[in-house]
Amino acid sequence: MKDFTKYYDFITDEETRLSVRKVADKALLVSKNCSPLSTDFVNQNVIDYSIPIINNFDINYKLFPNYEHSERKSLILYPSFEDNVDESEFITALRINNRSKFKELDHSNYLGSLMSLGIERSKIGDIYVHDNYADVICHADLADTIIYNLEQIGRNKIEIEKIDVGNVSFKEPDFVLLTINVSSMRLDNVVKALINKSRDIGTDLIKAGDVKVNFVPEEKASLLLEKGDLISVRRYGRFLIYNENGNTKSGKIRLEIKYYTNVNSKN
Image (tube, rainbow, N blue to C red; front, side, top):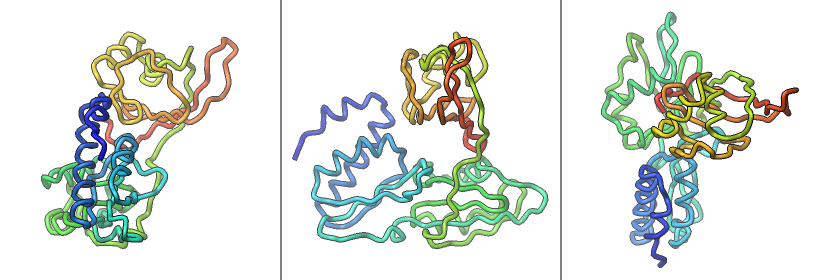
């Protein structure tokens, strides 16, 4: 078996490195005990780092959910001699129905109430918010805790029901399309335009670790961004470089941005 010590050292972000090590520990247990396990809900960056380690063991894996816009997924690990594994043994979907006709609930309302139960964020996947309900994906062993302890969100009465994971109403987070013009695709230039502040303020945010690119803190202001990159700026929100729409007459790059309006802006 390969020694991954240097591989872990290569992962510069401490939070990502810790998450990858946790996945590796689960993979080792599955390999030794020949019994399937699921990991915490992790982002795509952790998944990408984890797959080479998983492939080092004689095990298989599947991701849930596999919806294209899901940001947080669980790796379900199982012995190679098994053809498949039922994700519903490890993952449960809950539908939280908002019974108030007067106040809508947003992502932060649902997430904040779940966190108030003392649940770790890593045990809950994405929350898909709709007009009068939200579908929540969580580890199966947490489902009853949520059902029996969460009676209202804010002052809104709610009802919670378990639903089949195949009936989750997946949706991309709400967004508005913005157009910004930048002199280059450098991170500091793009952040400046996104937050509509000076370049110095954007650079200070980057140096302070308040900017993530594809879920990883990025302190290199000169990093060149590409279409499809996801940028999170603490206190300002989350932005996806959706498209490049040519150049302005002055030669600046015209970018189309998805600004996600219904996610946790604390990054």
